[in-house]
Length: 228
Image 1 (cartoon, one colour):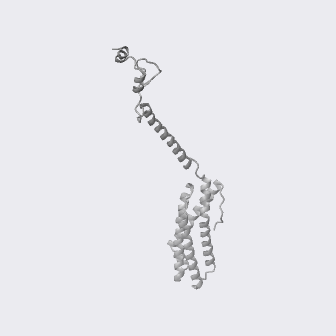
Image 2 (cartoon, rainbow, N blue to C red):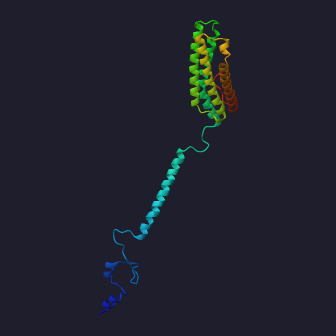
């Protein structure tokens, strides 16, 4: 066996032609262990494949951060809701047309009864018609008040106002019926049921009025109507 065949058989050094076929030479040396195997084409090397889950995790974290920031921009920050004064102002603004509706109803009733004859005649029918219109207006005001959201400090008075307005609607109906039947008079007006309805209705309305005046004074909110 020649020198070359002896060296090849011992595995000590691989000639360049053989290196080209079996791998690449690292560091250009012919030392044992200096040959690094090439990774098959189309296959990822282990270290490259290991990097991908890390990259995916970082992408997910970045996406989550973007979503959190977007949601924070949409959601109202704590303490950014309307102030107590703003809530009261909104409530007063919503109450204004209903208070004016009730005021008009009261004014119409006063006008009709100021000209009411002591005897049954056309003024009684006119007064009854006025009461019916007033009852419808007050009923509508009560319904509309129910749609308003009062400030916390006005919750109880608000509920009393609505109940009081409904008491007045019932009272107006009783009086209207008496006028239409010709039975209106001192006895009808002293009926305990009618008296209670009128008393309770006006008292609850007054409770709301006083509570609203006090709240508006404390919060510096003006009341844009005159009281009837």
